[in-house]
Image 1 (cartoon, helix red, strand yellow):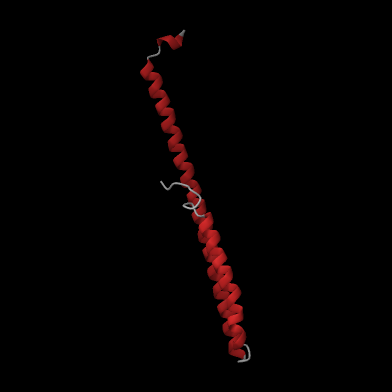
Image 2 (cartoon, rainbow, N blue to C red):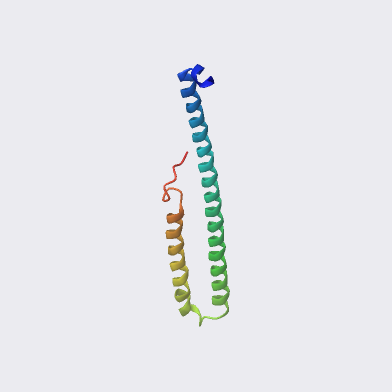
Amino acid sequence: MPSENVHPTAVASSKDEAFNYQMEFLKLEFQAINEVIGRIDETAAKVKNWAVVTWAGSMALALGRTNDLKKYLWITAVPSFLLTLCGEKSNADSSSAAAGYPSF
């Protein structure tokens, strides 16, 4: 039988090599996941920035035309502020640190 002629340290070293390969592959998977999460976070931040710019621009245009709308300015700011708070909470929940992913 060929397995009887194999030295025990050779078997142990091949198991160590296989384990090391699996660990390196796992590190690569975590890096890929972290990169994807980072891209999603960047895209969400860009969308939020455009939403704020659009809201501010529309408020500036509306307030520039008539003074009757100034009393409604703070009312329109409340939903935006609440959505920002909800978005920050969801970002914290979905971040890699909160999800327990190690950073390599």
